[in-house]
Image 1 (cartoon, rainbow, N blue to C red):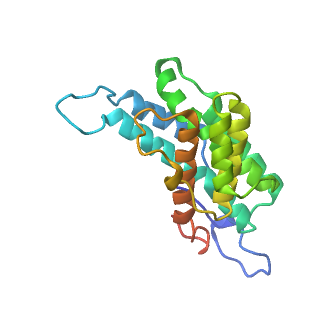
Image 2: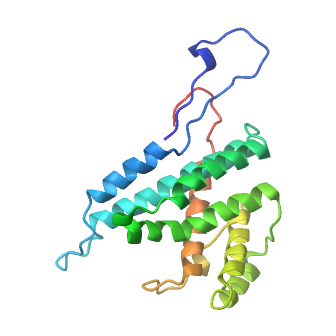
Amino acid sequence: MYEMARKGGKSTPSSEPLRLFYIFYNQERWDNWLKTLRESSFEVDPRSEEMPEGFRMLDSFSEDITVSVLKIIRLYQNNRFDKEEATRKLEEVERIVMSNLPPDLEDVIELLQLPKAVLFAACRKYLDGSYEKDIKTLVKNGRALEQDDMERALDVAAQIGASVIDGASCCRKYLKDDLEQPTLFDEWLIECERMNEAMDSLEDFDEQAGEDE
């Protein structure tokens, strides 16, 4: 998932703190996922209730991005990165994920990019510290806005995501029971729930220096 190594490969007696080097989401990783998607079938088998292989891969792709992005935030929380460095690394990943739309996978990648808009927006809000924390009210406001002003609805969803990064629980109970045709705001709430799960999985991330995760 990520790699880290001591500078120079050897420990040396020094009063300086251990410096760790993290390799985050990069173009090669993105391209490898695209290759996997191209080799996967998205055809629905009417004889099976199982999700097509391509959509299972897409879900794993989505989870990989969410966890990778939130590792940057966790390192910021652990004082490994300052705000400037965390913002820069976040922007680097965002350029890869949100700027690439290969023609042969355009429809598929759009399914991935739409929910990720709230992931990156929420991380920026968290780093800036500018967000409301009343999730119940935010969900209500976001649902009221989603038909008329998607930009403001995204801003509301990003505040929910920032609150999740900050430790709030969300968003399963706010999701509609029937999600056969989720709205875009529902997709953003689903992503916030995925962020919630990812932050829980990263609770001990970076606590033991020098070990791969």
